[in-house]
Structures are given as structure tokens and as C-alpha cells.
Amino acid sequence: MRLHASCAARQMPDGDDALLLLGPAGTGKSDLLLRLIDRGFALVADDQVLVENGIARAPESLAGLLEVRGLGIFRLPYLPQARLRLVILLGVQPERLPSPRCHAVLDLPEITLDPALASAPERAALALEAACGRITQLVGAFSA
Image (cartoon, rainbow, N blue to C red; front, side, top):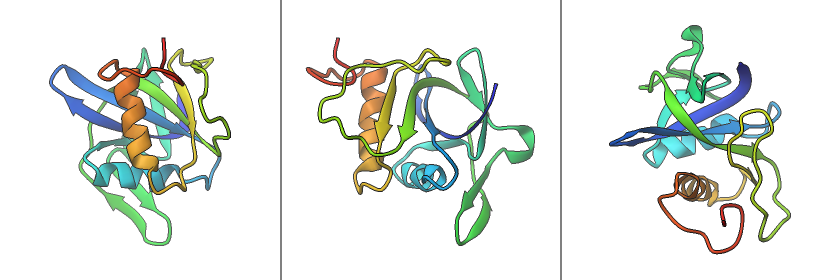
């Protein structure tokens, strides 16, 4: 399946755990991806993501490319693939304590995140840790 999305991953000893950034054009997918890379995440794909059996990768023609609006397209180090663990829909999150939900097609935990928030990269990283079960949440999107 080909998605208009961006993807970043945390490299872990037992495999790479990725999050998928979904949203309409211009919502900040590539910008949030750039900020995640700056915080230690690895680029998997920008603009288009191929997903097969829970694994994300870039189409061959876009592998290692990141578009930075206003600057152009850059070639960066990237992971050839990573296991998807979380879907992040970009938009405004009105709920203070959201209930857990699952992406209908990918069958993965899903959250909504405002990419304009200064803390958006840290929130995405925290959500990925929770989705992978490395941290516990008492109430909210990842509570049992």
C-alpha cells in the first residue's frame, strides 16, 4: 500500500520502531519529520511511504530524500525499512485525555497531534515509547 505520508524510526537493539505521519499536503509532515531527525530519529521515508506486512519503506526513487519547504530537496542518511508501531494523524487535538484508538486500515495505535506545537517531536517520541510498551500510561491514548 502506498500512502501520502512521512515516516521516522527509532533504532533499537531488537529492530527499528517507526511512526507514520499522516495528513493532507501542507500540514507539516516533512517539518515534523525534520524535527524528529534532529532529535535522534532516523529518516525512513518522506512524501510517500510503502507499507507491506507492517513494514514501512520509501519508494526506490525517493529513498533518502527529504523536502524542506522553502529550501528544496536534500539527500540524507536513511533506514531502508522499519517496523511500523504508531500512526500519527496531524491536526489539532481537542481532547485532553483521549481514549485509545486504532487506525482502521493499518491496525496500529493512532493518535492525533498538532504539529505546530513546540513539543510535537517530544510528544511523538513519547507516544512511540508508549505504543511499543516501553513506558506505561495511566490514563489516555495508550492506557489499558
